Image 1 (cartoon, chains in turn yellow, cyan):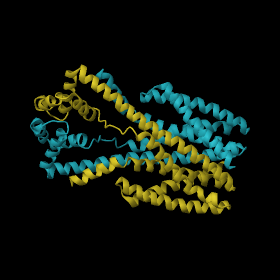
Image 2: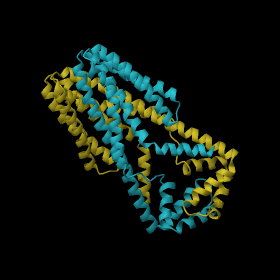
Image 3: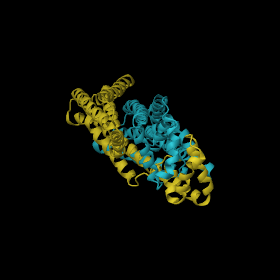
Image 4: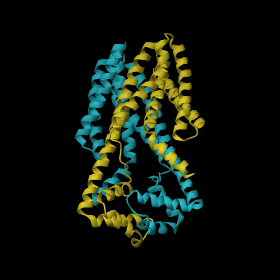
Length: 232
Length: 232
């Protein structure tokens, strides 16, 4: 049982790339699909749908990619700043750091006498004391410094890959109505498959996730379609 | 100094709503802006830009809102599942749980003899032992159960609010070229202001964040504009 639990956690940590793919593809499948459906509900010509779809894919991929990059960078900077602060505290205000450790244990009904040997042990090595405080006081894990760029590229790439699924029919078929129908059919299949895989990777119920993902894409497409029809 | 550190952390936790606003508004300002610029680079009529823009705002808000909802729900479910597992382990396999606590301390160079009083203290109250394991073994904090819906509404609302900034000029001005120019001017101001506020709230350099956010929006808009011009 414990091994299962540990496996699950490891799985969760190892799958940062998987989560980035999910973040990018989730919006990448849905938004260009809904936009293309919306425009083709208002305008017959496939050409405008393709132009708008490509502009959307580029804009969405850039915006989300940079967003992922900045989030990862900001997380890494936050960790570095806090670590430097902890190092300084451990050097200059050791007594206060000791008290903080005692306080953390007290919040779990552990008396200062009971936590004293642990505090003494941590004082043997200041760098390990900093490690301990980063994790147990601040709840921060050291982020992978190379993550920011990889995260940005994964999110943007997944957005583009997802976005071309609903857009391809409009690029290949000159008949706008037929393109819309094929786009809906292809995207529903893709959303269903993506939702199923997402459920498997994140440890949720795969079939439930498949239906849910397809439903969200359908709602977004339907709302965009009728909104565009009303406006135009 | 410590108080400052604590303040910073509290600030970070209190601002989940602020982070949701940032998530929604960051893409909401950028993507509809870039899409509208892209389409008006290819098609002169403001009507199509407004139709596509509204479809995009609806699709983006729905997709990102549901995305935020599912992420918060999945986090809450993960916590509940893991907590039940820890409770069961503490009840049925206490000796193994004890060993796990000893192992956690060992990884910080604390000997089993030194951590023994802490282990004994935790065994007095199984529920506190579970609290301890959730935080120190799994690194999980209890999520707010009401967060999912609030998070979804905040992200979607911010996306819509952000999206109307670049779109409004196309809705109010019949001259497509003028609308594009006003949209660019208004959106650059909005991105700059948003980037500055974002920097302040997240504890980064505000002016740096302002320039960065404006640059990303500008790149997305520029790429979408030239891509749409080439395609059409």
